[in-house]
Length: 161
Image (cartoon, rainbow, N blue to C red; front, side):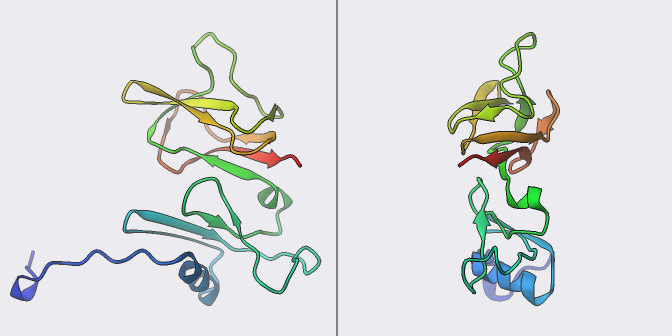
């Protein structure tokens, strides 16, 4: 591998702004784009919303639970009305506190903000993952005992209120 001339160091590219990623998705007519740079990950999902749903002429964006991720509303009502709870770390997903115990939550259950939804085991430490909103569990996206990645969607929650 060739060294840069003059002993210069390679520079890490700066993380783009959310607006830059949104503009890139719009410019290239992409329905979805994910960018990771300088330790930051931005994911944009584009879609259309009807004029009566839009409160102003400005684009409407809704943030997901994880830092650095923005989702734009789509025509799919389920996609517009759910909050994605994502894995904050790499580990093993468990629906219950013990193999013989009942799951923390099931699809259709109503949950309160701060309520434990699952456990992710990482390096022999059990990390409780909590609901970020009051709502109803619309979908559980991971099977019990399955390994999960950082940022992987775990639950879809329909907010209440």
